[in-house]
Length: 105
Image 1 (cartoon, rainbow, N blue to C red):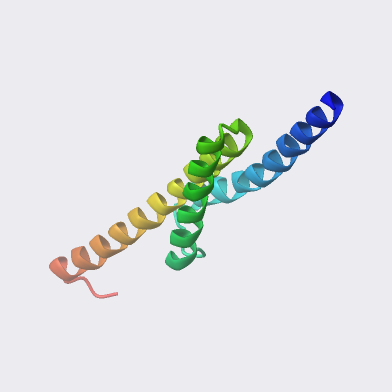
Image 2: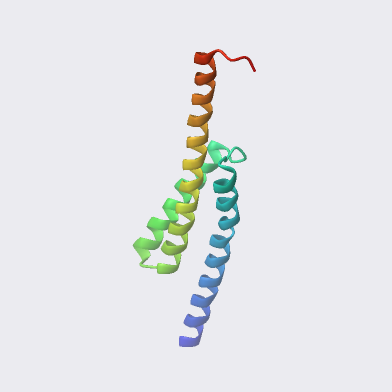
């Protein structure tokens, strides 16, 4: 019985590590290019709410595998949301700045 528990725990750790690690290249690219235009707001919103739901679920069950992996993915999603928001703010400022100076493009 104990071997089964270890096997299930190991399976959960490997699975959650893989799904969490797949976000590393996305976050790296987003931070490197400073844009998240490839992500839709609807996707980011629904994904982040779903991840937060899994995080709360893991906390309620006291399942550290679920809450740690979803907490890490949630931080990745929030970093992409932040970059997307900042790029929109920066883009808006550049248009406003061009209008004030009046330089033709």
